[in-house]
Amino acid sequence: MPVSSSRLLRLFPWLEQVRQPGALQADLLAGLLGAVLVLPQGIAFATLAGLPPQYGLYTAIVPCIVAALFGSSRHVMSGPTNASSLALFAMLSPLALAGSQHYIQLALTLTLMVGALQLLLGTLRMGRLASFVSPAALHGFTTGAALMIAIYACRDWLKIDTTGARGALQTLYSLLRQLPDLHVGTLLAGTCTLLLTLLVRRWHPRWPGMLLGLAGGTLLAWALNSIFATGTLGGIPTVGTIQTPIPVFSLPGATWRELPELVGLALALTIITLAQSISIAQAVAARSGQFIQADREFVGQGLSNIVGSFFSCYVSCGSLNRSMPNLMAGARTPLAAVCSALLLVVLVAVSAPLLAHIAYAAIAGLLLLVAWNLLDLPHWRQMARQHRGDFVVALITAAATVILRMEVAILLGTLLSLAGYLYRTSRPAMRTMAFADWSPDRQMVPASDATHGALPECPQLKLLRMEGSIYFAAVPHVAGRLEYLRTLPDAQPHLLIMAKSMNFIDASGLELWERELTQRRAMGGDLYFHRPRPQVIELWQRTGFLERLGEDHVFPDKGSAIRAIYDRMDPQICAGCRARCFFECRDSETQGQSVGARS
Image 1 (cartoon, rainbow, N blue to C red):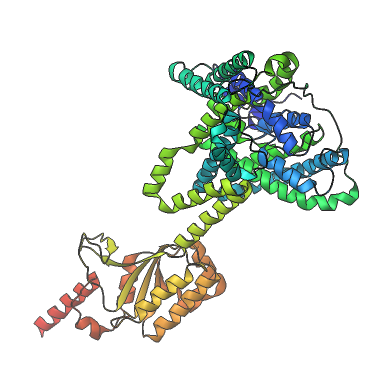
Image 2: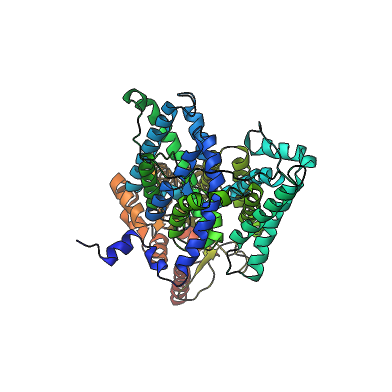
């Protein structure tokens, strides 16, 4: 039975954008750029992973197509990445000789297991875990990734050998130390690519600026290599001969005895790849304005690795080096990633001699432009002025991305954001309230409100507004504040809690109000609540606290609360009170005067 168009749109919502004028053309041009960019990266990343070079190109084809079609992001391109390649090598090198047939089989089996775990997480709707990556941590991660892209791109831009340098910081140190030995030819080719891209974008924004910039830089490199075979102007490195990257069907072939050891590695690699993929998807979405469905993204990544493992592909995930250029090149739908994968095969098959002349320095020029756009300095200035806590989180996450591994940086940024949230919510605001006027719909304001001056308080009733949840982390702060109010020389025995903003309480919060109720009644007063949330009332009912408190101590409005509490106050104190805060006080005073006049 043919699949209806509505079902197709539910399965592939991006089909709606394909119908827009110029969408296919934009995707085709962006895909061409993506295919050119992944050529040297795929080869280099496969080498990092301890696999033959063609496996990097295989991984840039099949997983890229599957993740694009079944994922959530319209712009993320999946494939081999620096981090996943290094992680795979670190995990498997103790188990088998890198590059051996046994090593390849372990890599394919591990890829299948990672894909199955990713698919399981997406199917179980565990994508909500991605919401714990705060915008501040995401911005810091993006900035750190931009710095890493720039540092590693400078190696090809300046043609400086950083062999032996481990990590971005050592690479940067090696670059600075050897800066006087930079290669003028690669510097010119990379700079030409960068400037030409900017000029095209400035004067002809509809043209494929990045492709034209890459072509211009490569042409300059070819000319310099033709004129100067060696020296500081010649000998510019190029991509070189590339084999046709048609994925080969294969079955993962690890033995049953090896599977238990691979399970732990698969769990770790799943966390690494999903953390990178969802962070990259959100970073790209923050610039494109798209909403990312984390569950669907997990499913897309899982399917891409499952299918890829049967076509000689190793672990893939979202690639920032390709996703951001894809967005900046004007891609509109996931078809750009599909085009990129298919064009990679066509390009290598048809234009291998021409593509062999692509200069690494020209690719580095494009990556430097991508890195600069990712830095987003105006956003950093805004955070420094308006959100100091987020600024610190973003700064630490950015530094950790450069110094530590990417997944560790994401985890650290997330933990810092959660710690900041816990700190803020552990100190809920507790404001003493008072009435500002005598209008029929009297509004409560903080008693120390500067616009009204210090407002008088009732000597027997404290009006206290809670602004936050009472849970284990907030209990020490709230308990300390309540104890301080009880120990004041003129402490009011009765306490009315404005609980509309008290969203929930846990077991610790329940114990807090139990203690406060006991303390207030020991003082000769009582504890009351105004408009507590339904979920709070339900908890009180289940635990019996509402029965101990008394249902007549919970009020739906301030008027009924004050009338009921006023009748329980000490009339002798009321007789000598000069505050006269409530209507009931004035009514009582008027009645007293009338009785005195009649007598």
